[in-house]
Length: 452
Image 1 (cartoon, rainbow, N blue to C red):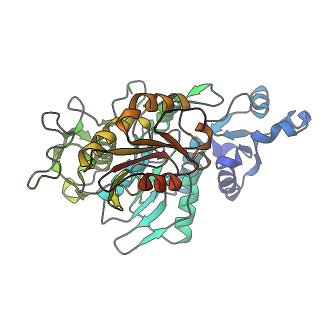
Image 2: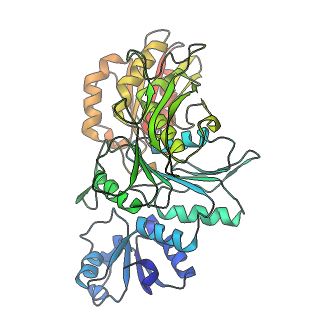
Image 3: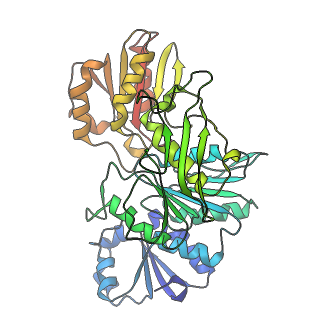
């Protein structure tokens, strides 16, 4: 059932956006109720009998074992996901008239890709929503919105705030969790690596993201790192290597970016038979200038390729693209603190998989050759933490590379051992200890899962 045909609707999960969706539906004249499935055990079971709704709207991550889900299925009530509901509400209300829209999902690199897209279209009016911040950026000023997460319903919340502020973006870029809603002209999947289970352990997150591609059927372009899409009728653009249709040229595989930081030479984006939203095929090369050499790491390569691919897919002329790119604020950056080199990669998207590459960079810049590693998680700030066994393995395999390792997170105490292993309750305390226990010229790596 399509949302516009339903009169009485039940929206599940107020923790992840049900109230936003319900508010939009009430504006459309629908009779709406909100239900929190996480508290259903406290209710009399008679509450679930004879549910009388035309439609149930539930998030993709919700466990099918909740009684409300079982009873709705038993009563043959049709379901929409939050993602699908957002798409239909946006269409009914014509929220994106005269706005080019990019939405970005994936397991790794979502925020970095969104922020890089914003850099590439510098000079245009951009409404940018990521898990780190929401901003309206124009040539005249930047307006900061209240902080909102990546749940799909917040697309509607962001647009509501933009309307209240009477803002007119040329481009809107949304980071969305667990799949694409289908609101965009271009939908980006950054990666399906580092997969995990959702919905009470009944689904792979990657499978849910792939299924969300159906929301783009016969509409727009999907940008992705080489997925198999033949079963879905969408136009697609691929990034990530010479065998695909967009890549960043390297030189003898020494670095992902050619002679990064060398005067007179620039890395080059090469694109071949990319399709734009107007249906044109384009090809060519764009030289660009990374501000810092650590943008040459794998951490930035995929987000940069995805961002260039998305912007070109929108049909923005190559000569209009800003090629003067900088590291993403709140993502990996290099700074000095009391004479120590700090490689700061502590954020919500931190992964242990990049540690080897970051450690090699730290070794190169350290004046003394000595390094301190800070890892772990400030778990009160993130939904998806750090796996204990993976953390143990890192400590066991790499302890000898570091002067000391400081692990952030109470849950890891007494569970990981080592002569040079120490613990801190929070990131700030760990940084203070690292500075105190080191000397000028040391390199400190901060690689903690936290929300920035």
